[in-house]
Amino acid sequence: MNDPALVNYVNPTDVHVVLSRIPENLRARLREVFLSSRSFGVRILGSVRTRGRRDINLYSVLPPRVSLRGYLGKGRDAAEFGAPRQGQWPPWAVRRFLLYDTLLHELGHLQLVRPRGRSWNRRFASETLAKEFATSWRRELYSTSFVHPDPVHNSPTDDELGMLTFWEHLDKAQRLKLVHLVLAAPHQEMPDFSIFEPLDPSCRKFMSTVLGVGGGQISVSS
Ligand SMILES: [Zn+2]
Image 1 (cartoon, rainbow, N blue to C red):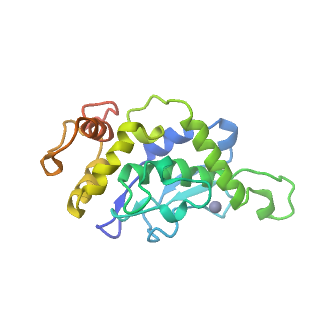
Image 2: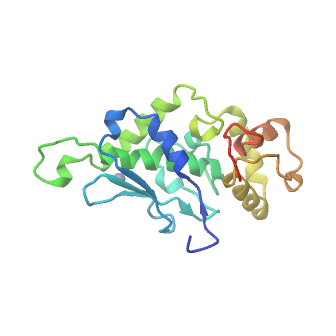
Image 3: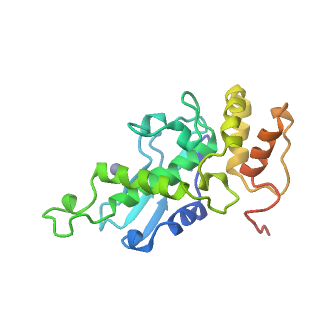
């Protein structure tokens, strides 16, 4: 990471989980997803490598204070990702967007829609089709419950949406701390939460879920 102030929202395991949920024929062309540490200051979140059209770049290294509202456009709602309508997005919402929108969108661009098309651009899914691909697959995947300890792999629960009020009341330093804690999950034990108190029971429940406290995602450290 070039700028130590930036944080990485996504890891290879996250990408693997999402892709494993997509039918094999739709990822037949995909060779590799590169988690690029290049940062375009939130202007670009993903792209398809032009050469061969088989690889995806995901620009998941972003500032800790970020809003992806500008990417929503028509027909998509911040709440779908567990984000507030205004202001900084919580880290789990940023992760949900990168994994269940950007990644799926780029996978959409790999779909051959006109195999005999005259030009490279006509053969593959356009911007409109890539958007539709991402939205319809996200909604399809989120329509049933997926057994996974990380809440980003399901649509936001009531506990999570309730947490937004709490998030909005945190100050800059508290949010930064929470971003780092969430991105360092899973944690063996509940981290020191004193700076976030008071926390109501449903927030505490969501926090321990999103921080992966005490297992679920088993990490073996040596
Ligand atoms: Zn696109």
